Amino acid sequence: MTDRRDFFKSTALLGACVLAPGLDLQVRPRPRARSPKARMTLTYKPFTATLRHVFTIAMSSRTTTPEMLTEIAYDGVVGYGEASMPPYLGETQESCAAFLAKVDLGKYAHPFELETILADVDAIAPGNSAAKAAVDIALHDLVGRLMGQPWYNIWGFNPTKAPYTSFTIGIDTPDVVRKKVQEAAEYKVLKVKLGRENDHEMIETIRSVTDKPLTADANQGWKDRQKALDEIAWLKEKNVVVVEQPFSKETPLADFAWLTERSPLPIIADESCQRLQDVKKLYGAVTGVNIKLMKSTGMREAHKMLVLARSLGMKVMLGCMTETSCAISAASHLAPMVDWADLDGALLISNDPFVGTTVVDGKVTVSTTPGIGVAKRA
Ligand code: MG
Image (cartoon, rainbow, N blue to C red):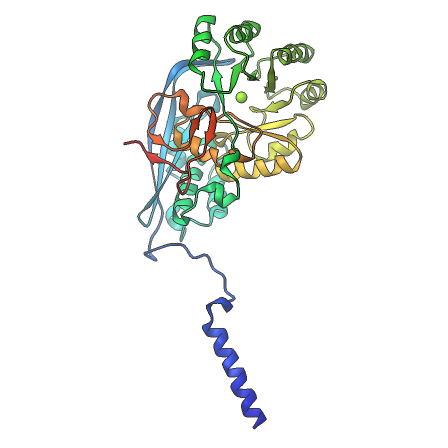
């Protein structure tokens, strides 16, 4: 009798294990696939971003930026991405198209396995960081849309903590600089491009119009470390709050460390910091790093760079190229965790095909729709 009771008890328990969905020990991702045969397809087309002003930095001038716009479609949902390729990045629309032609997303069962897919994409060829970002951004947009969440929610960031963005004033004649500064009335922080012989004229011209805090970007333009230190002391008096990339990226890290140790302002590495491994390399030599999606191969690695830099106690600036609102919106989901945002890329172009994250009263205002938060402009 006792044996039969035990038999019924154990059979009932076994039944409960099979039937109760909460006790299913096999945890699998559940993609929102309406069709089990759904596969991802990647498409891309070239785009030329037109700049509002001729853009001059220490090394070059230009009026347009070559780009590639990407889409990844999966089961009726489309994610958008972008590669922005200013000349100094070394990529072209041709090299980008050649890279994207090698990306086969059809072999993956679903888009959620971002780590695997993006490691495979990274392994196709070295370099091509903007082309890789174009895949990464579209894939993140797609995954966020399928999950019904913006990426700041998936990452656990509070979008209202996004900082003010700086607005870049390129190197130009005093008349044009004054006009640009007046046009930038909405912005609380201005970014000044230095590194040519007229650095003091640039700063004095801006100071004749406004006393707003400035961030300074030497774009590798300074050669001598003592001169750089003297220059930074002068800049601090002019209410400059941070200095980016004082020396060439070929300059020994010991020179960066020498300057950082003595500098009254934080020193941020931009051209010296491309990808994740650079953050560790630069630790101790600079105060912080400037993370940009077009250098980092996209959102996945940019997020890892942010987390690593933070864990090492380094400052973080979030930057961009001249980009449409697609890549700017993608980057903006990281903005709540950075010290300085420099996300004016879409504001510098006149033919933005997207709407998404915007700047309201100078503050990065992160789009709240799922994915990276963009829609195509009507
Ligand atoms: Mg820079």
